Length: 256
Length: 271
Image 1 (cartoon, rainbow over the protein chains, first blue to last red):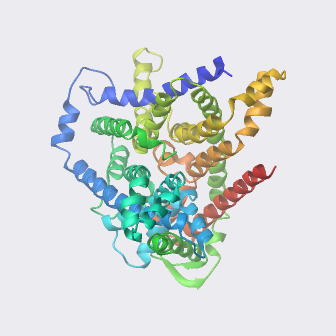
Image 2 (image 1 turned 180 degrees about the vertical axis):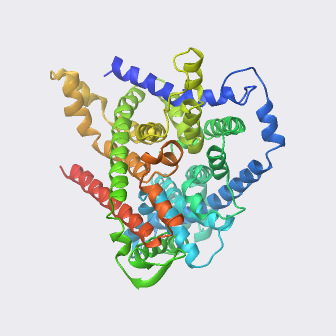
Image 3 (image 1 turned 30 degrees about the vertical axis):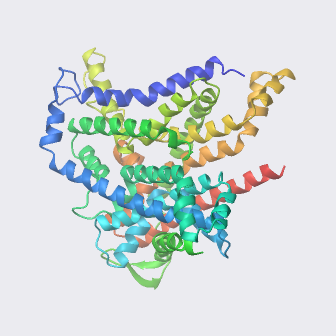
């Protein structure tokens, strides 16, 4: 059945709704004046962003550092867990599945509050390390499930063949399982990286002085007086997002 | 077991243990400088029975409910359209891009458009429709708008997945048997994508109920939600048992909702 006029109209409306606010932000990143009145083209806000916004860049590098490190750890632990949950037989498997679903279900704010209280109780100073721990925690289950779903369309006979040909367990892991699961592993890394770069709420709780990430910096810029520098940051982030989405396009199907 | 151990230890240590600590803190006595005294008390829960808190709870529920309803009403036709489109991949990418875009930037975009000094007010002033400005932001409706905007892709994607999996022939058969469009929609399409519909609803309702940044940035004093109250109890009021009690109730409510979901999809499999 072909979609009717109503669903077409709603779809068009939705895409307009999605993109108009974003395009306005992009357009005004090139505006001459500080107020949202168009007074002419200018690269003023980009100049300010690149040369006079030390804080923004430090926050950006903090975000990248946390995203890369937490995604690496989450993907590595998640991949091993997916392999274990898929092939190993052991007691308590269903408990691990339940524990894996919980972080996906429970609202972010609960994860943030719990970790804050946990760190304060153990007298662990809030820093980039605590942000790294938090981000690894919320990415872990996503990473495991993405790799797990990739393993589901995997013929176990390949692994058996490797054993028959004399491969040891670790050789089979590195030479057979990981290469076949690789698109899933890459998708898991991409997903964890995006979750980490984007997270505001959980980071808001576990960040200490001097460990500001980009979303926290943008939040404080929105809170304490808007400068069109945010439009320039937004535009660059959007370009980055679109570029990454396009290059990762063929791996996206492993995420959904 | 070997492969799973690192993962399991991490989740237990940094997720299960902290959540259990919060649960236990909700039953303890408040310490004056934040933190708790380690003795049993129900004060954390008792302090929630105030008119102010019940108002916030009620507001959070209706805002999340209306936002979820609007999101699903928009997402359903969009998902249906994309599933039947020839340029499926492109349209899906256009849904995924806002999904990957930093959520604070998406909130900011609406502040930029709707703010007192925002685009729309500038235009209204220029054409002389208003002298001062219209306050579009800082009310519950602005919060609903931005929640819908933020979580719409979360609803479109699972709905698209279940409509795409659905055999197109089922709908065609319904039409051949004399079904009209409305009937086909309610009697054939909806029951067949039930699990996608429930997933989409949970993906929007749960994060909406736990929102912090959206009501904080585009809501006014009269649009505070549970998330804002947790933060207020934690930082301003320094009442950790109360913050823990709200968090525990929110966790429990979420878990009950999800269990009902699991039960309803299991029923679907059995019949």
